Image 1 (cartoon, rainbow, N blue to C red):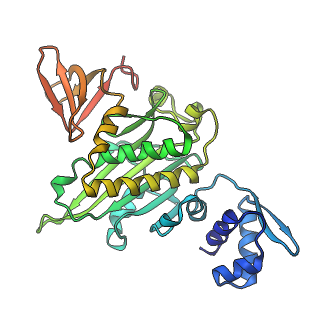
Image 2 (image 1 turned 90 degrees about the vertical axis):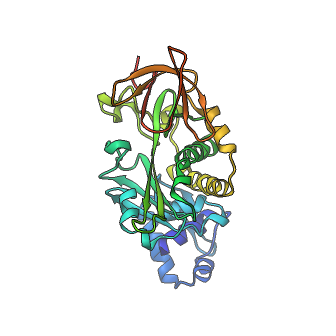
Image 3 (image 1 turned 90 degrees about the horizontal axis):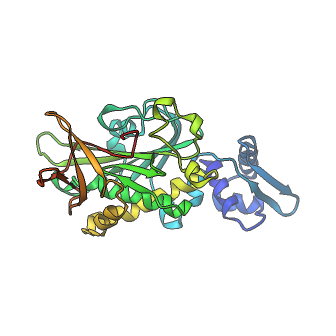
Length: 328
């Protein structure tokens, strides 16, 4: 934690900051400050040290650490309960196992997951030093049935964070995939827990996996027509800590809007939904049915029109979109 706090001060400083000022601000000894600086240098940070002037941060590696992420957060968000791991099995699983220890809007971030999961138990590739794997826990005072639209709000928030950081315009594949260049760059998995006796909501946990700096060769052949990364769309590398901070701030704004009943997120979702206006295949137990996605309703349901003119609003399940993910 000392190293993270020293890093934040170095990043906040305009030019040099003295070791004495760092020690005073953080209530540390000069020895502790010197050790923290030495540790940052060993991590790959380039730090200039000039006698009588102090330290100046020259360059930073692309690390996903507490100090890096917090340095990009606005002052009002630095108090976010943020936990960062280098490697973890799954950020969603960790929050579920320790949910009583975390307050509303806490966030867990990992540089690498060994057991990342997507919808329906699918594996989500989570290699180190390339992506962002993060989960938020929410504990709203709401009836569970009022949370069915939450993943839709989260999809808008994630796309907002990407746009804020990278200046790009992500699209959304119904219900929870973030798309750039017709390739999936992010997925969202929202899980809910209800107390068995009272039927009261215990928590919502939303896991977000973002492919940030992968190249096309990083994906196995079976994913070549499905998966991409933000850097592939942008044409340059993205600072993961900055993007992570932008997503955190966008999720905070979204949560306030959701709690207040702000339905503008539905309109924004519909505007970004790449599924609308395309032929789709609705995967059902009784057999797949082909139709045409004509819109999004007020609860983020996908309105599908079939060849016989009938319409159905899909709220759960799988929908394949012609032109995406190898579906031709």
